[in-house]
Image 1: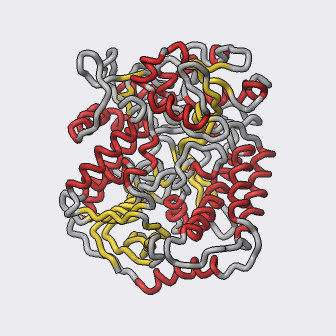
Image 2: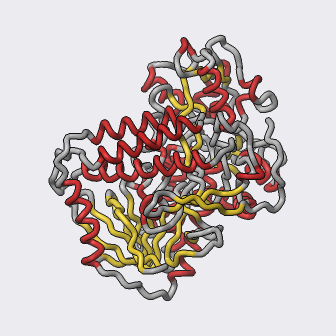
Image 3: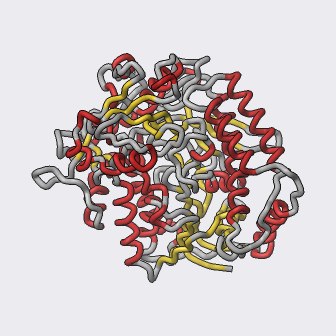
Length: 569
């Protein structure tokens, strides 16, 4: 059995920032499926929000209001307030850690406009902001290597739980296939989102719901899983992200007629409306037959910005378009479509990162979470661009402080190593012993297709019910799959099968919660219930497992400063 004071699962921004806090006093393990610098945080391009006021006067109050309005008033406002107040300090700390931000002519940190924000408050490093922050934090982590051990390419299977306390995780070394138990005084999940359940997605291959499903399996509910954000500018048919920074710099969205159609949907903000509004506008244009050449895409037009500005502010976008499409955005518009991007819901946590198990905020001892896998609900029903990097760093730090306080002087809990290992080894054996002929790749593709078509930008009761029945059928077929590799060494097939099992379960949870919420709010839009219904649905959803299927309970939204109002742009 391996022992560490604290084990952090996930090495993106939230995980590494948490580790930097905990390693000041305690022995820390960071467990990751991929090398830290390949974490999905590095894919965030456009910026990280803070009310620095370097471009024009700004305040945390304005940042807070924009965030709450952008989230369609489902945000917990006490958490939002603390989060936006922390933002300026976080930016300067990142700068001191070595993150290189783009600058104004006066030498200040440059800030650009972003959808839903009333002021330019996106601090950026060209269009590689997540990459820049990720590498800065990784360097800091390497400086603390004496108190931090990174387990690269290890897979987390499940939590070790004794009553109301979490005592560790069961893991396996992907290289050797060996199953191990890591006993810890506290566990932190920073495992990211679950966007790979959709066909068109900007999410990394590692975003397969491992963390949220491990929590769900031990009785922890998932909060607001129906709220999935579709980013307006994913590469047509592939989902590779073209950053919102393009629209922040002044790019246009054009339909097949060459019209800037956002004038119809959000006349005051145009292309810089919140993402949910822009994604629905794009889909509406395409559904009306105004997609480019009749296809399911529209144009992102940067030509008027000029080569100099594009190369200064958006070099990665230009290169991606050349590499994947053979199109140079300096001379030609880019075909884009809405792409599954971000999970607003996840494991319920309080403002300090403690995982909670009910509406009364009852804590599970020794278990914490931060980043996209968690739901502290600073984003509500729809996240504003640049707020996710901020969330990862702010709540990664806060979770780290909470873990440090909790684990300091704590004894290890009881762990039956043999029993815990046997549980996971049985999972392996079950898969290896299957004699069916079903293709796991086919099952995965059918799941992605049905989620995209029936639980995507637009939803309704009929589609959602078909989606659930289809997913149940896929789950039955999953049990009859055929395994080709039964070895232990670098058997990536077996881990992909386990990930698929997690995604199938997660997809059904998303769909069930979407069916329950009979209103439209933020990233969740029901064509059969097209209005927001504060009377019936101004609350968070909590989805629990039970022998008879999912049980959905509710949790009040924390409202402090801003009462729900009509959301117009």
